[in-house]
Image 1: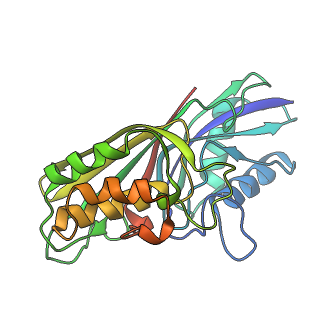
Image 2 (image 1 turned 90 degrees about the vertical axis):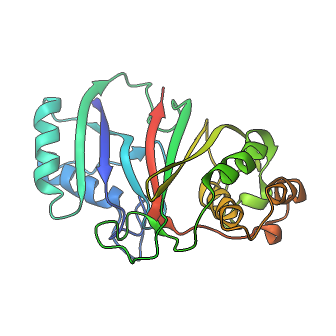
Length: 245
C-alpha cells in the first residue's frame, strides 16, 4: 500500500463542496471515481481543508492510499485525464510515508479572499470574486482586521453548523490590501472554524463601505455571539491557498 500526496487546484463553482455529498457533485467524489477507474480500488481521499460549495483552491493538499503499483507521475496524469470535464487539476503527486496525513499532519493553512471593487458587473471574474460596487477603504479594513489577529474566542465568526469542539482559535495573520480594483484579504492560522474567513471578510467589508466604524469589528469579536455578525461574505471570492507541514 502506497500513500500518495496530491496537490489539487480546482474551481469550486460546480461543486457542493470538497467533501463527498449525497445531494450533489464534490471534488472528493470526482478524484475518488477517477482513482477507481485507474486502479480498480475504492479509495478515500483525505484533504487539508473542507471547502464549502463555490469555494476554490490554488493548492489543496490531499492523500489517497493505493495498493496497485503505480508511479506518481502516471497516477497524476491518469487522474487529470479522468476527472474531466470537472474543473480539477492535480498539479503535483508524490509518494509519502504512511504516517503522513493531509489533514492531521497539517500545521498551518492559508486562505485568500478576493473582492472586485467596481460598479460594472463581473465578466472574467464572475464566480471568482465577490462583486462589491460601493467604494471600499482597504486601509481601514486592514486596521480593523488587526483586532482579530491572535488567540480569541471566534464564536461571532463561526457558522451555527460548525462541528469544531471549541470556538477558540489563533489567527496568525489577517492582512488587507488593494491591487487596482481588487481588494485582497489574506488569512493564516493553524486551522479555521466553519465560515470563519467569510464571516471576518463580511465584517471588514462593512468597515470598508463606511457602514461600520473600525472598532465595531473588535466589539463583534468580544460579543462572542453569532447574532452580532454583520455580514457573511459569499463563497465565490474564497480560495484555499496553502497548507504547511
